[in-house]
Image (cartoon, rainbow, N blue to C red; front, side, top):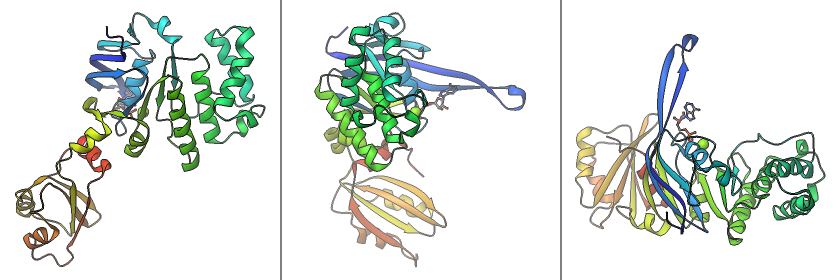
Length: 327
Ligand SMILES: Nc1ncnc2c1ncn2[C@@H]1O[C@H](COP(=O)(O)OP(=O)(O)O)[C@@H](O)[C@H]1O
Ligand SMILES: [Mg+2]
């Protein structure tokens, strides 16, 4: 056990068996997590980044004791998520995405009273604590309104208020800005940033690279149930094969043309993507020897050829990590 760690995950596997098809006769077996290894330090925002279906929610639920691992060991705050469930539940907060989990017919204060009772917060402290968290998430002005009148963004703030009501040491936020309008998403990110100042460790999942970049000094990238990177944002930036990206578009390319591009000096990757009848190749380029002009010269006989150069973005690095190489 390492006291500096908020989360320690060793060889975590989680599978789901489900039935589908006619009369649910067909058994399917999904391996959502395939041997996850992860350490998360205390007192910062840690980002788990990954596309839909990567396993983010599954991992978040296991870390917050909602779901059991199939195999492997998971410790949160130095305690085992399978054995020390009740010890952990009083010390962790969880906010899952979506709109469920609030009572629409009653106001914010009444909703929180219900959860305060669930968390076992003493009656003497309850109302003061509720006023405090409502203030904390900037909902004081709407605290006495029924939740059914709340916007999506206000509901999300109330979810976060619920998540911190019992003053957890660690807060899990699963895609906290999904489905929010840009202004509410910004406010939610600001709120998340301010929580960490108070010493809460935050584990946040997202499928937006820019969100991870804005909030998280460190991120792990989850792809198809495996951690494919675990690094600082600066570290992720530096791992890119080249600092330039060349995009080439035309009505299709031949294999030998793609091979020629792959053979160019400093080209670390060539990925292909179709846009209707158009095909776009994306090249990661490390040296100055390969320019848009060199690329153009290698592709004669394409009347509609377009070649552009741009800086490689963090988003590109993320896509490189989660997508398999085309061709
Ligand atoms: N209860 C379940 N039953 C069957 N399959 C599931 C269940 N929950 C998740 N999965 C599958 O596990 C994989 C990971 O899902 P999830 O953890 O929700 O990913 P993410 O949150 O990154 O989108 C997906 O293939 C998903 O279909
Ligand atoms: Mg999810």
